[in-house]
Image (cartoon, rainbow, N blue to C red; front, side, top):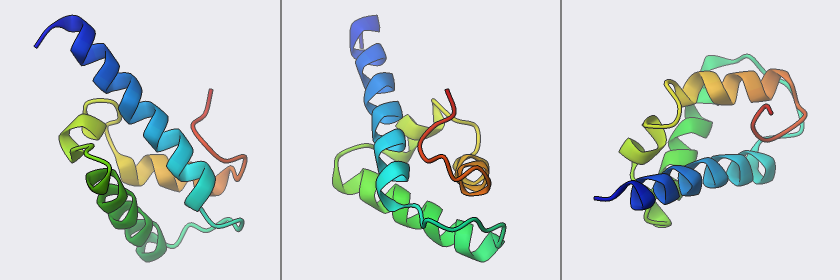
Length: 81
């Protein structure tokens, strides 16, 4: 796989994460681990339906759980820039 393909995969995973969180995270803040875990399962399932493997996402972020948790605590939505 060439570098160009790898970079487009990375961009695709990041774009998906940002769009999914903006569209699907509740408009309330929570630090409930069960709720966050459910959201992570939903996120990964949605990614799979769009042809984005969990491996591709985990190449971009160390912890999807932590990413969703932080987004929920800072209800600005999407990825921190």
